[in-house]
Image (cartoon, rainbow, N blue to C red; front, side, top):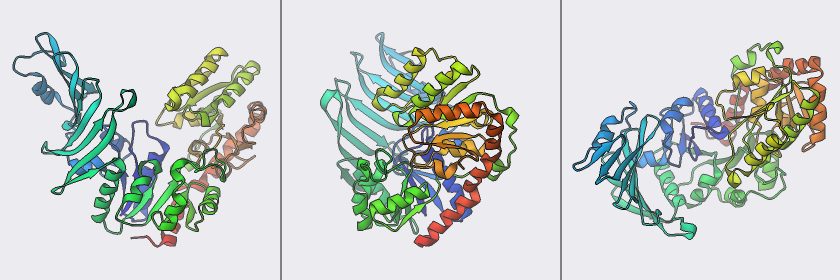
Length: 500
């Protein structure tokens, strides 16, 4: 059994989790059994798995131990009525009162019961019960400063299965100090979540036939791998660069500092990069011959064969598909568009991606302030996250990428697959392997805003060349067809001798 490991799958599904869902289809085609492992609790698991068409293919740490009998009907009213209607209480809406004081408060998530607060006579929350698909899943208990003291998870019979213990920390933030797990008649204790995760992986792998781990989220489990008692083939996937600046010889991200030794000790069996160039760099940097370049995604044949008329594309429409974070350097494209719009009023930019919370949304705020200060709000639009960008890619004239570095640049591949020409900085990694320079798009010197402006002006005023790029975009993307990517995974399995 092959297991693809990640932290969790959110409603705003990231490229990593989308890649895992596509990889399942490849392994199904190769007749290799595979599932996804998630290590964090996720209230959105039902809707996300349904959206990604991976129902029944996910093993979650908490669900594995809890075994809750989820109710997916969406009707929690009976549960809510039973909670609120207690002797001596008056119910108004989703709140129960005693002596005119709020004592029980129900909070919904859409049409499902999310959590219930139980308040003391002074109005402080004493405990909070969380529900998951109609089941009482866990309870948080609070002290007088509203800091959590314990969180306890229940099994399907309402028994306490797992307890997280907290103690007071700095700035009134509780610190996790102990985890207790009641498992198979034994009480296990862990100092942190990595210990729990190592135990979970050991348990799961002991029940599996020929298990192989493919790790997609190193920050979620690297420390756990070093605590595991079970040793199985384990491969680390680089979805982004392994250095902080994209330079193959630059400073490693802290999580990868133990990687060379883990390879030497056999805790990691090999590396998988999204591009051939990064695979070569990683082999040299981490001193391993087991380094493979396999694209993290593929395009369906029907997409590659789809005819998309160039006349459908809106003149002057530029798009950037990127979260609002510093590494994407979206200020480069915004500034270029501001200058272009002064000469060509039809130029319009739409940015698709969610606000990155890092540094308290500093980059997002800065970009939006730039647009406001330049009075560019009528033609520079922050469109947020969108799951399906088909119409966006098929009506834009150019997709622009200005990142400092990428692991693969999936947005460029999606754009090319929809016949959309691309203008991108030639960075590590991805653009040079996705875009056929001067054929399906343009590769520019990394971090050169002047070259970006000049190139965009050249293309926007030369529709014949732009149409030629559009006509060749899907052919460039065909390198990443289902058949081609599946073949690369098959070669990897054969080279490592890990086929079932």
